Image (cartoon, rainbow, N blue to C red; front, side):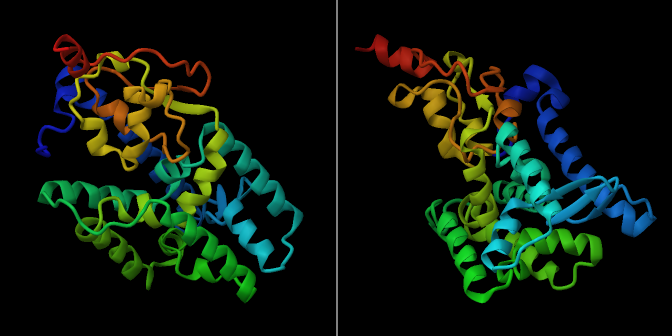
Length: 299
């Protein structure tokens, strides 16, 4: 599939802005959140104090990364009560909108890996190393064991997400090398390697989002023309097929917890197959794409 044609049908049908609205919304979210954190150190406007680990908004609202809190508890240190309140707020939010929304709408590393995916497509790089997507859960378990064994937040010293965010606020330093390594790894070694296969932060938030309310759904899947653009741009393409093709009588809702609700599939689909919805009403129906209709006619 040439890089020039991915999403071209959607652009022709809806115009450039219409075919990139969710990408632009994600970038606005990511950059807007970064701006709120940076306004204090750079301009003295302290709307948000702290970082993605723990922050105060307007000196009232505490927000705590529940993954960091879990590691902290395993080190046998008891945080202040406001850390638990902040984690409860964050968990409630992601239980509503989807755990891996953090990955696509908040995490600053997502912009790096998106750039790597774009460059990889432009260079026409195919194949690469193979690591199971389940590896991230083993890495997640190892970070928790490491916290319990060392009594420290050892993983956070090298976690690209934490390093990059702290670096943007306080100065990148050695974080440049880690982020560059993630970028080069995704370009030359493995497609969607870091976010899709290795990142324990994404693994943790996928567990949070298993029962989340907001979902992407292939509500017009009978209109699919099998262009494969959604598979080409999705960082977790394995989550699309059951809902799109009704595999094993699956309903149209993408129920997999690793869907990041990024909206890429919505943007590139010229047939408006995908929309944001809820997990309810996930009743299986008969799928009849053009390819399936042709196959049925030949029987």
